Image (cartoon, rainbow, N blue to C red; front, side, top):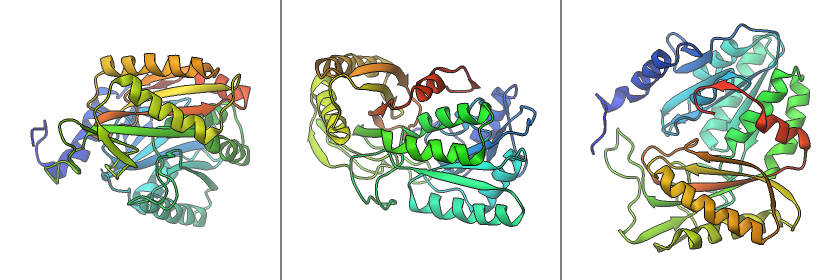
Amino acid sequence: MKKILNQPTDVVTEMLDGLAYVHNDLVHRVEGFDIIARNEEKSGKVALICGGGSGHEPSHAGFVGEGMLSAAVCGAVFTSPTPDQVLEAIKEADEGAGVFMVIKNYSGDIMNFEMAQDMAEMEGIDVASVVVDDDIAVEDSLYTQGKRGVAGTILVHKILGHAARHGKSLQEIKAIADELVPNIHTVGLALSGATVPEVGKPGFVLAEDEIEFGIGIHGEPGYRKEKMQPSKALATELVDKLIESFDAKSGEKYGVLINGMGATPLMEQYVFANDVAKLLEDKGIEVNYKKLGNYMTSIDMAGLSLTLIKLENQEWLEALNSDVTTIAW
């Protein structure tokens, strides 16, 4: 294993200290906790928090800031944050109007965030949540009942952050979230596995000429291994899978997110984007929003994911296009 770190056991705390140092104009680390919170003065609005295991940077700390998350809880690498950490994030974020939690669909995340919600409510803080399960690749994975929560989560941050900034109530944000999440679908592929620092070797190994469709962001198995193919063929597989899952029709409006898994250069992501554009155009899909980059990574996995959001509501598009002040958006 060749990585730029000191002790593997210190990687999360040292990363958070480094992040808070570089971006101290926007965020700070909550003392004694693995939480990144925004510096903004509280204004009595609903607070939005998210969290999960580390290793997916810039998710989720990179989306803390004006117009998006109030705080992010960072667990150990690929490990859910503990309930006491989540509770502290709720208390840190609360502005008096309640706290909304965005939870990715992993059993540990759901259990720990719900325990924290119970504890916060005992302290008089109103809490609501949504579970994001945008990954259509497989049902019932290693750490998940149902579908996994992956890159589409950042679109949820953006749209709900916009609602919170505009003074929507906790109940209104919950209603938006429940309508939004089923309209976001993602599927990914990997060229190589990710190496967790404390483990020291990749979570899975693919042959030199092999790829895997449908992998998860913690290296969970996908749905099919194949020989390496040109970008056009990879794009066709992912686009067809998403079109089928939405039963998408010509003339419908969608947004596109192409997300790098950590070790795939932007050069390759843009080649893939070019292929996706042609495929969607051929199918008559109207693309009204586009985003590309490394947003929900899997440490040093080579690969990418493709997300489509069905833009059922014009306000969602306005929210996606609104300006925010964060590290990574």
